[in-house]
Image 1 (tube, rainbow, N blue to C red):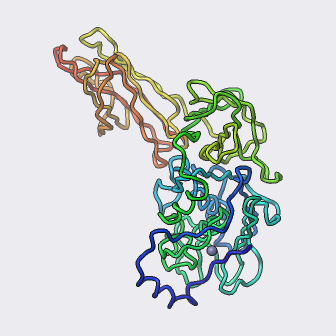
Image 2 (spheres, rainbow, N blue to C red):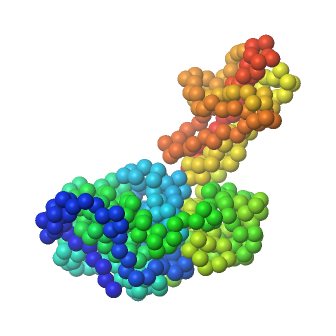
Image 3 (cartoon, helix red, strand yellow):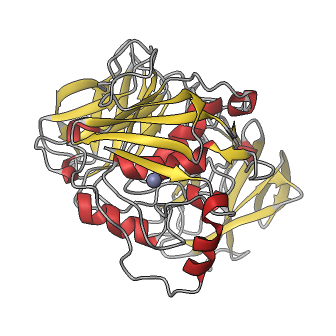
Length: 450
Ligand SMILES: [Zn+2]
């Protein structure tokens, strides 16, 4: 079975007619099948011949190890995922919003292939020759897999990350790939002009990178609305001795599998798997050895069972991730009116990739309000019977309230622009029985890493 995508020029009058019609509520169609849970893998045979298809040399923290056409195509597929891919970053046209499917479906990136493969090998590649009105097509055994081909001519393919300059001769690899992946998932064309599965490329091609409500409804009808009890990876921590602690929700007590991306392109696309893993802490943690041939890519967790809802989201994973320097506390905290010592501690690493860094405080005043603040450097200046340990310009990060045991833990968002910079943190809080009415913690120096 073939599904095609047409240039808009020939369809201009049809588009105009479509614009005059109200958008149908359910315009999606299905092709008559869906992908088996063992067909979540995908690869790219990077034979794209236009220099513009591979001129983005910048790796993205959310897509470890990929650049150029493979990076653009990987972004296109994760948009169909159950929820945000990592922190959802990577596409300037959808800031922090990549992963919009809301269904029990997530793809598993398996790197580069060394050929276009067969019609069920789940590989994206270029096909030499002139497609005429057809830009790309998807071959679809459906449950057994698929193959996607982009015609070399007549357009120039662009890998982004922004949109190509003009749409007459230039096309957006990511946007067209998002449409073709819809076919690979079992969706036909939609009658909704706004949908990514609308048959023709519109003049606003960037819109096709982001799937729309009609696409979501069609996807959810195939794979089910994302189950709240589906396993979910939220972050991970690399441990000494080549193991990883995967942190999330709804892992099975026993019998979990962790899927990794293979480091080499020599595989048949089957995810690298570590099986029979137990979870701890109420199904929120799995400790898994990292196989020596696991490369940068994604990890997924599969519970025992074959329901679509037994497979987790895909989470960006890089075993080569360098640990950040450990945050360092400094200075002397001011003892509170309750004779406790308000001390800062760091939870997780201040990494933009992990983005789960927290600054915690123990020894505060139960239920008191406080402020976490930061500055570019350290200092030690008398203030309110204690020491101000952060130099100006001081930034108020957030207001918080201590718990009933005088404890708090505050998330600090680490965005990519912060990588390589250092900040100094301290907290001020209310202490009504103190002569100055205020408490001050020690300081913490944090250097952010990828
Ligand atoms: Zn199509």
